[in-house]
Length: 369
Figure 1: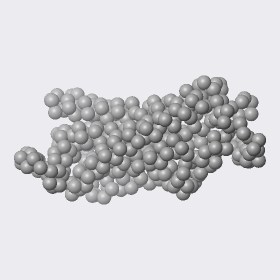
Figure 2 (figure 1 turned 180 degrees about the vertical axis):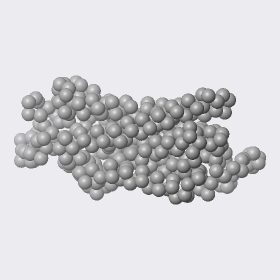
Figure 3 (figure 1 turned 90 degrees about the vertical axis):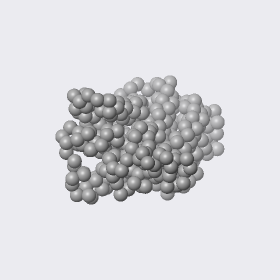
Figure 4 (figure 1 turned 135 degrees about the vertical axis):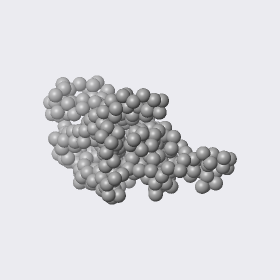
């Protein structure tokens, strides 16, 4: 899933000097005849293209700064305590790395949206693959965190704590391997193409509509529906256990659990719903309508910005909300020589295995929430 680029035929009055480049146009149509509709004239998409050029660079720039700072802080704090990381902290560390790597690609797509792709075919493949690898990694690691907590709280099973030390690392390796597998189409089919209709160079997939639809369906299922189902089931069972046990600390933990699932669903559901409508339009399940196509293109741009915002929310939801994470942040600042915090050091806990963002302690006290 790349940041949104208009895939429909776009015509404007400036696009009509075709007779001067007739041979180039014939070559272009011959290479892309599977994507062109022969039964209806192409739709004018000037508004959606102009909207993307104004909106996408701005939102990608903001998300790049916020996501890099927030996830960079999470990585710094967790690495400073790497000898005391719990399984949840390890997943959180990989999640922060995935989110940081994802937002690192956004400036490239911002330039692509504002002007054109100017970075060459090699970087096109690398940037597209890196973006998708970390898109999948973020969703799958959230599912791993929820499953780990589900076992710990509902079944009082310490899958990673009492097992071999390498078990959590092996789980992360499997997650990254799956993400690399899902991103193979980007390595294979992404390339730089010259769009003679718009007179721009773009980083786009070089496969027919059927392949594009298949890739989008895989993204919908593996990158959204399955992780959301795992998170919803695990946290629903966790909430059922927490509701039986009263107490202010556990009520705080319950609120955090709800926020986790709601944030993921609110950020990603609108985007995937719009993509689903776009899939139906490309498959012909919805009647062709130029106004609808233009609205869908604009909706994809807006909802994609909302979806990528989740990378900035993760540090807040999984780290800065946690009491222990804030305490470890103070410890890191003290080691870096931050003035005025010496009195706070005496109040810091000495526990070595509590989750950095936990409101409680071990499994007997509902670890990890």
